[in-house]
Image 1 (cartoon, rainbow, N blue to C red):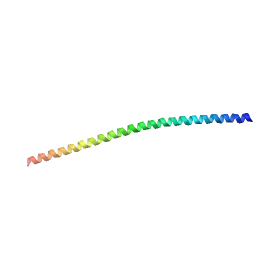
Image 2 (tube, rainbow, N blue to C red):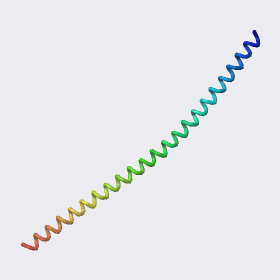
Image 3 (cartoon, helix red, strand yellow):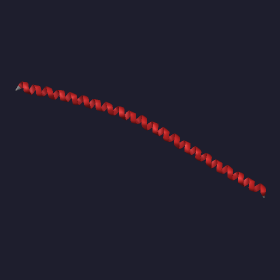
Image 4 (tube, helix red, strand yellow):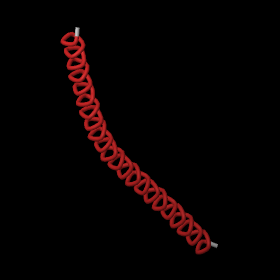
Length: 81
């Protein structure tokens, strides 16, 4: 009977060690994935910011062209009069 209980305790200890190792491995894998997601998220943010700044620049240049065109038109009209 003691041998049976002892063997079951040993099996329980082995199972406990296995589960502890799996938990550690899972936590390590999760940490790597989270680090990867941070890198990916940072890259996506930088790209989005660059696109936004490019859009603002294009919009400002278009507004400047409109302003210059209107000024040129107004100057042309004032010299005709």
